[in-house]
Image (cartoon, rainbow, N blue to C red; front, side, top):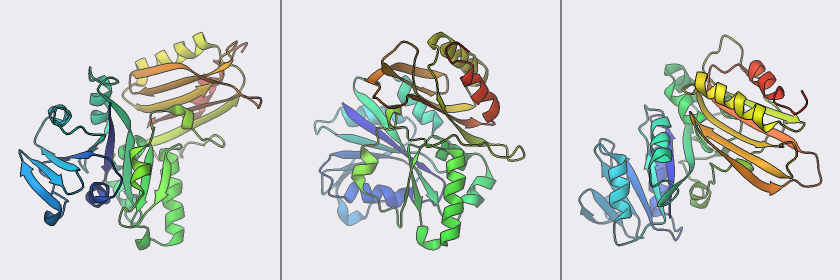
Length: 314
C-alpha cells in the first residue's frame, strides 16, 4: 500500500525548497512528488535523469510529476508504473485550503486498500505568517489541517517573534507537531511517517481557551476531561454537530473513556466524515478524555459544555 503525504503552505513559505529536500535526501524510499503544472519545477536540472510525459526521474530513483487538472489520475498513473513506489507527496497550491485534497483522498474508493493518507505537512513563514493570516482564510486553513507544521525561515525572525508565531499557531491547531526550520531542512523520516490520522498520538497537556470574540476565524478547541463517556450521548452530540456545522469543522480527533469499556475509544473526523473504533487497553493511571476540534468560528465554551453533557450519569 502506498502512503500519501500532503504538503501545504502559503505562497513563499518554502514548499518548493522542502520538495527539493525530500526528493534529493538519502532516505532509501521510492518517492513521487505531484506538483501543480503552473508551479515552477523545483528540481535542479542536473539531478534529472530523463523526462517522460511530465515525469522527471531523479538519480536516487525518486520522481517528480507535474499535473494539469486531475490529481487522482496522476496518482493512478504513478501507482500503475512498473517501478513500485513507497510514498507519494502531493503539493497543494499556496492560495488554497488543502481540505478539498484531503476529502478527495479520504472518499476515494481505493482509500485504505491501494493507498492511505499518512498526514498533512504545512509550512509557515516565521517572519510573514501574521501578514499571511490577515490577507485571507487560506493560511489559517492550511495550518488547521496540518499534523506537522514546519515553522520555516526562523533565521529571519527574532526569538520573541518566533514565540508569538508559535502561540498563534497553537491557537489554530493545538495538536500539530511544530518544528523550527531554516531553508525547510527537516528530517525526511519525520515528514514521511506522520501517522497523522492516528489520534492515539494526541498530546494535550491542558485545555486551550478560545481567542477573543473579535478575532473570528479558525480556532482549535482542546478538551481534557476525566469521567467515563456515554457512547450513545457522544454519538448523538457529534451527529448533531456535523449536521449543523460540518463545513466549519475541519478536523476532530479524540481518545475517550467509554463507560464499561476497558479499551480506549479512538475517534477522528474530517468535515462530515468520521471513523471510530477501540484501541489499546487503558493503563493503571487516570483515564483522561482528550477531544480536539479545529475549525472556523468555534464556540469553545459551548463545545466543552456539550462534551461534558456526554458523560455517563450526567
